Image (cartoon, rainbow, N blue to C red; front, side, top):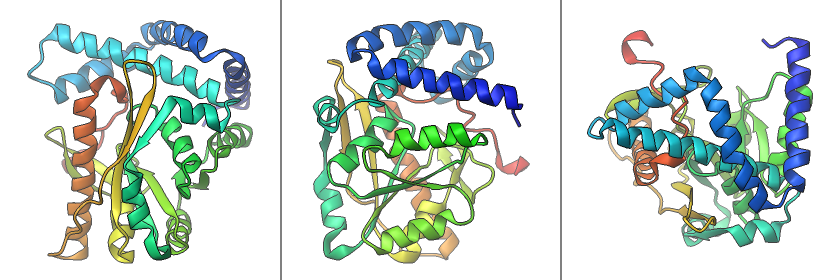
Length: 299
C-alpha cells in the first residue's frame, strides 16, 4: 500500500495533469504527449522489457525490427491517449462527438428493445476512456465496474473524470455484480473490460494469442444467467487523428454443456474478439500489462 506522502503526490500529480491537459489545445497536447511517454518508458525499463516479451509471445513470426516498431508505436499511442484524457477533462460533448464516430449502434438499439438490458465487453484497445465517454453521449445508458483506488481523493478525481459524460461507475467487488444486474434489469448496458488478469474476481482460463490467459468471467455469467445479449465493441485511432468506435453484433449464446462450460465458451468468444481487434491495431493495446501472469499450473 502506498505511503500517505506518495498517495498525496500521486493525487496532486494527476490533478495537475488534468488541469494542465484540460487547458491545452488538443493538437498541442498530442504533440507533447508522445515525447513525454518516450522519456517515461526509457526510465521504466521493466515495463519496456515486458512489452518486448509480450510482443514476442503474440507475434513470434515477426522479426525484431518489426517488434521494435510495434513497441515504439505502443509507447507513442500511450502518450497520445494520455494527452486526450487530459483534454477530455474540460472538453464538451460536441467536441467528443467531433473526434469520435460510432458505428454499429443499431446492434445495441436492437438488444435494448422492449426495455431489456445488454452486456457490452471491450478491452484496453485504442482510447478506451474516450469510448466510455462517447457511448453515453450517443444515448447509451452505460454502467461499468472499476477498481476503487486506495486514496479516496484520487478515486473521487478519477470517478469525476469518468462520469462527466454520463457513464455510471460502480466499485469492483462483491456488490458490483448485483449493481450491474440491476442495471441490466432496468434496460441499461453493463460494460466490462475483459483483457486483464485480475486476481480478486472470478475468472476462467481461455486462449489469448495461443496461450492460456486468466480472464474475468462475470460478463459471461451475467449474460447467460439473465439471458441478455453480450456485444463486443472497440475503439481505434485513425490516421487523421480521429477515432472510430465500433459496436459488433451479439456473440452467439452457448447452448450445450453445464453453466461453467457455457461461461467458459462465451468468455473465450469475447476474448477472441478482443484478440482480433488487437491484431488489427497492435500498437493500440497495453502490452505492458501482465496478461499471462497466472497460468493454469500455478492457479
